[in-house]
Amino acid sequence: MPRKTFISYKYSEAQDLRDAIIEALGPDADFYKGETSDSPDMTDLKTSTIKKNLTDMMFHTSVLIVIISPNMKQSKWIDWEIEYCLQNNTREGRTSQTNGVIGVIKKVYGGYDWFKNNGQNSDGCSSSFYQEHLVYDIIKNNRYNQNPKVYSCNTCKTVNALTGSYISYVEEDTFLANPTKYIENAYEKSENNGSGYDLTKTK
Image (tube, rainbow, N blue to C red):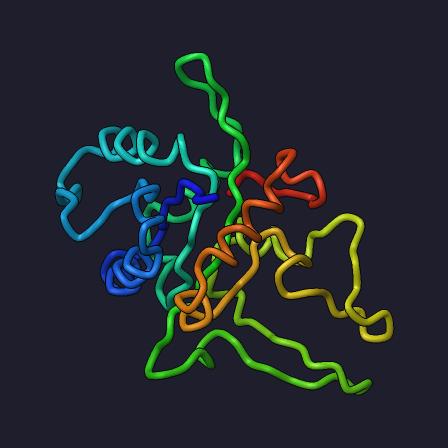
């Protein structure tokens, strides 16, 4: 079943990936509620007007796609958009549910090592390590927060990349090859307001 989605991203360095994600959604792009290349420029609008426009788009969505890019923390809006989508907001007599959230790592100079590195634990298990100082606290605080934790390996305490964290990371190429898989995974974790995770809902 298609999910209503919104993409949160730093415009100056990730609009190309935003467009690629919308294209990869195929027919499901009809359920995308965020900005596109045809959207009017909101740069010169008052902050209150921008917030109203964004909340109008986000309120009815169920999955937030966050583009993880090198300078995302310079954005004025990404952490606020994540906070809004994680909370239960009421308008017109309806209360929104907590959105599922998926982080899509942008490919930079042909790779992902600016943010992600792979290694091997002493017991032979593979693990991924992330430069999480490059992302907002509201993202970091929703990583490895499954409760109760389910370990892929009880020896080295590794967790599943898609279920061990409320906000999972997936590389751009992997996401674009099958966006429905990762959107649905994020949506499933959001059911019952993310009850299987210790959620941090404020930035």
